[in-house]
Length: 67
Image (cartoon, rainbow, N blue to C red; front, top):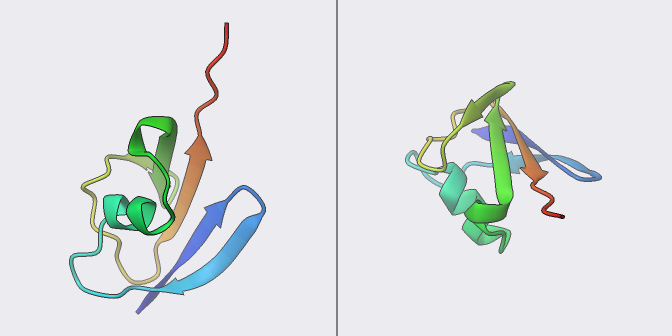
C-alpha cells in the first residue's frame, strides 16, 4: 500500500507503514510543523488526523507568514 506525496519539488511514491497512518504521522516523520502546513488529500483540504489510504495523493503546502 502506498500514496503519492507532493511537497515543494518532491513528488514521490511512499509506502504506508500501518493502517492508521495519518497526515500528522507524515508531518512528524518529515519533521514539519502542522501549524505551518496546509494538507490536501486528493485535492481536498484535510485535518492532520485524516488517515492516509492506499492510492491517495497527499499535497503539503507551507503557509507563508508576513507583514
